[in-house]
Amino acid sequence: MTKAVEFGLIHETTRAGDSVRHAILAEKLGFSSYWVPEDYAFPGAFSICSAIACQTKRIKIGIGVLNP
Image (cartoon, rainbow, N blue to C red; front, side, top):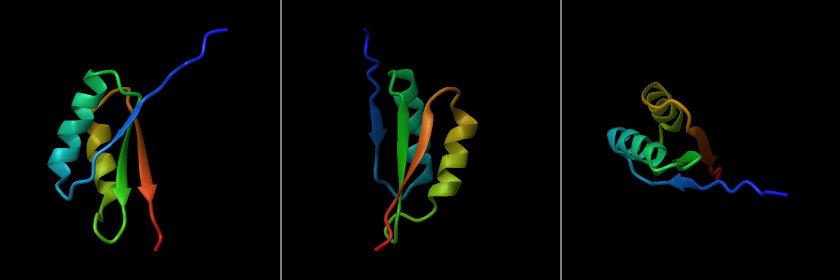
């Protein structure tokens, strides 16, 4: 039986453009997912994920939410 291996990437930044560029690169490098943090220090994850979805084709997008 063959096991599927997937690798995801998370990058903490407050710049949406950086997240989009990193997600595009992660997709090109074969990562299966890109995660965007959401908390008081990193707001706006839903908007950033929308921007990433507009610029990528197959990478999965996740939101890491922390409720302190």
